[in-house]
Image 1 (cartoon, one colour):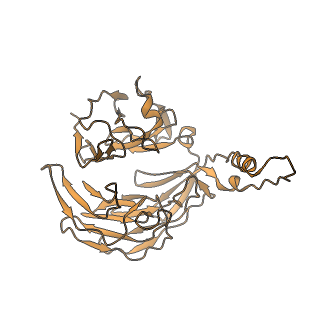
Image 2: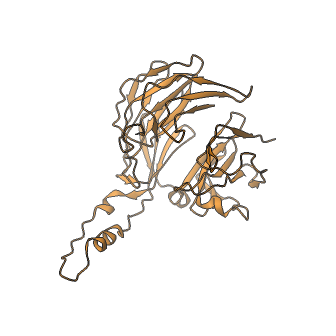
Image 3: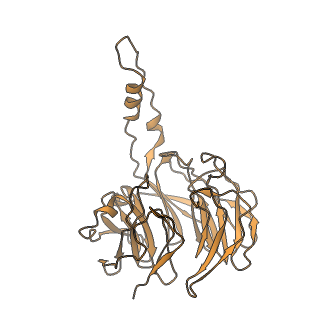
Length: 345
């Protein structure tokens, strides 16, 4: 497992470490030759850790970045990536498919900003970039982007043209002021989109399709080995079997898990999916709650209480064996560098 960047509460960090879960050991790596950042694309492929794009938290958190670097995990040395054929952006999605690292989409790093509809792949051995075909869907924000069965899926979102409407109001003595005008403008409800498209790296082509209703209204998804698991705002789950295009409802969250419904973070664990409470936007949520759905058996698992205690903004990932790893985070006591591993029998 690789931990990189973040903050120690006083300054952004470029440092990192490689954690060996098998031997319960770790070693530091030298600082990266690029600015510390958030919202960047990250992936591990062929023994290398790639990161690209994001927001510059060292100098200006609103500054978008278009550079990247790659870490040789065994050597512990960094190398700058060549210029990508993509503009600067935050929150792009990344996945390793057919031996290549594909980076796609992203946004301006602000709430409901339009989605970039282009992407590129990079060859891990040579670090050469290659642009891919542009997505044929109309401009949109808040779309779902995920990989399943080696294919990139882009689904739903909101039409960006809906939020650009102009409202003209003649202000007379005693009439409403600018504050009322702004609230009227923000009350324009953006139109929900229900279409989608799939990208195949082999043919460098997109195919538009009509996604199931449950997928268009999902707020987060996880592509498990049994299909695409979809969760809506209430935590209700459904399984989309992409090969048969069949949608099957999954069991609801167990009683007493209402907190997780509003704080969804998803980690794929093989044929299981973990839902985590990672803290609210203001950092006020100090619990560490988790629920795991066994997709194959169609049931939720009872989890033991985590030994980490109450904390938020922690990292979560999975191992090759499908175990859940939680690390770091913040609590009233400060910043943490410990972690725990949940092993499934």
